[in-house]
Image (cartoon, rainbow over all chains, first blue to last red):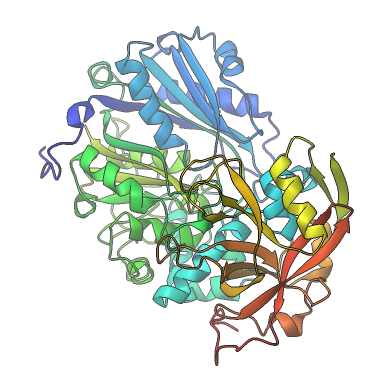
Amino acid sequence: MSLTSDIDTTSPKYLRDKYAIVGVGETAYMRGSGKTTRALATWAVRNAIEDSGLRPADVDGMLSYQSGDSTFSPFVAGDLGIRLNFYMDVFGGGSSTEALVGMAMGLIEAGMCKVVAIFRAMNGYSQVRIGGTGVRAAAPVSGDMLHSRAYGWQSAGQMFSPTFMRHMHDYGTRPEQVAAVKAIHSEHASNNPKAYYKQRVTVADVLASRMICKPLHLLDCCVETDNGNAIVVTSADRARDGRHSPVLIRGVVGRCSKPRLDMHYQHGPISTVAGRYAREILWPNSGVGPEEIDVTGSYDAFTFTTMLQLEDYGFCKKGEGGEYVSDGTIRLGGRRPNNTSGGHLCEGYTHGINMVIENVRQLRNDVDDSCPLASDGTRRHTYDYREGGCRQVRDVEVAANLGWAMPGTGSAMVMRRG
Amino acid sequence: MTIKAQYLGMPLDISELDAENLEYFRYCAGHAFHLQACTACGLLRYPPTTACPWCADPGARWTPVEGSGTVHSYTEVHHAIQPAFRDHVPYLVLLVDLDTQKGVPTAEEALRVVGNLTTPEGRLAPPELVRKIGIGTRVRMVFTDIAPGLALPQWTFDAAARQPAAVWRYPED
């Protein structure tokens, strides 16, 4: 296939399509996994390696991210009998997956290892709650938190809300427009047997749910789950021997930030997020623009985060994100569906990596919906998106994942069908 | 000198190593708001830091700053995370553009100082006061005393200021 090429001929395009995601794996999205994060990670990595068609002994690099709530690569590698040539476990959340894919490419390019497994495992409901209650709320307040947590300003929802409110103020964005993100993602989740919440909800349901912190109703917020997720990255050459057609990486931007990363509210219009900066790396590196993307994975820790990122990465004009997410564009069957798994709002919460897994399956034309399996094991997609039906996007060639850590920091990646 | 205190069920700790925060909160304990002014470029900064976020110079002079400003954005918290805040919901977290240095060094910048909406005495505001506040409200700084050497800067409705005819509030209100 050909892509309408290079919007910036000076960009470092030499890594385009040289690396691939060849395996994806996960554990069930649960509340109460009954497993340690080490067990969740081990299962997820094992499943991703099996999916790739490689053997554990082929993997010689491992990367993970966490927030003091997970296990480390050496334990997972040990459990799977993997001898590593490189590993690193970094601190971080929703801007990590795409950034670590970029690091994996760099590691392989540098000759430090050949096949890298990336994982995130968390008991985000039953152990360290991602919403910030429990052990996170009990920790002493010191350092920079004296200027935030001391004011009852701690959880992700509380911290991001001034950005969301200011966007409504500056651009007239309405609650029912962003609520459409949840309604649409719930439609997608109803066609995802893995999703924690499969029940379809309406915009009215979102607006009628209890207020958490303005402008976030309960249903504007993602679900807390226990889960392990993993992906396997290797060179495109090696990927050709895999079980599935490879999904090629076009370009990555990792942990790109607004100025004043320590307190991003100090700088610029607060209704603008890191995507405004990240897009200037993502699109030139990928050689495509937003108009060429068939499916997006815009991080939905909250309905608003999906909207803000799609807007600042240029899928619509600045200020028109509310319309973009509510006019049917991002729905299955629409022009550019977003989070076809149901995302963090419905499928489960693992800091962005599950949306990458979903888009890998989309690009393989092999999402795990309820469509019938043919005798050769491939799925016969019906493209009937009614409840309980198909969630495969038709003719999908190029996908973008937009990861979010906070308004001031994001990561993103473009992948294409190999 | 390390400060250890309790506030609304939370332990607040300032390490003896954290010179910038100790100095900042020591001024607050005297109900005097001070920020660091860079000795190289002259710009004020918030919150306290080791070097200047505009020019990277480490030199700074603590400078008195007037505690007045305009609400830039806010959130109204109905579901508290810290248990002791549950007795005070809904409470407001305000992001306030100080009048001092507003629009500097670029038109979109301001010193945006975090605080809760409180009564003039520094107690978390009751619901009838919460409902009056929105983007554009003029506020003035007050302090909540916590411990020797530690008071939190807070914001209260500025009854003496000229208030806008209407402020922006979340539309379901």
